[in-house]
Image 1 (cartoon, rainbow, N blue to C red):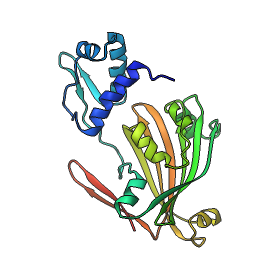
Image 2 (image 1 turned 135 degrees about the horizontal axis):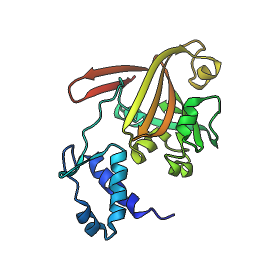
Image 3 (image 1 turned 90 degrees about the horizontal axis):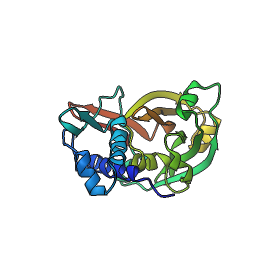
Length: 242
């Protein structure tokens, strides 16, 4: 199915923002200029810019045009990392193993799933992240098909859904919860560790503007993964894979 022109325009501008070509405070071309560049109607351009504003990537200012927005301050401890890239950056061999994938309706008894589904269906993906041939983390993820319909065509048999989402559906807000737990029999078997082993659990939800994107739970082998955060005015550092 061809991608609508307003989505192409949105994606082009978004890519420039995420790559750093456009930084907070930079003006994006006025709508009249964008209609000339893309050879389209002003309504098409307006729809693209409105989508960027809804996602929190740009701000529309009266008499000052549209500028790239400053990053929001999130009430979270950690950034949203790409686990595959983290493992590779440590000089380790990374592998993702898909356990199951299915499209389903949200559970009526789970308000969080109802909110994530946003009147649509959910894509549920289970898998295992490996580092140097050893299981590092279990992942249980659900994705909103209402917000990310293109994920229905992604098999995730080679690459993990987290990496795919970071590349294709950049988040604007995130919420993270961290807890410790003991591995039950299923978790211990998947991680090839003894039952009762100390594990680190990270649960995360992300949004794109006001639209919910995904909810994920990752359970790590506590002996091979820890967290490190350094906070400053503009940035912070996160994790360590051992």
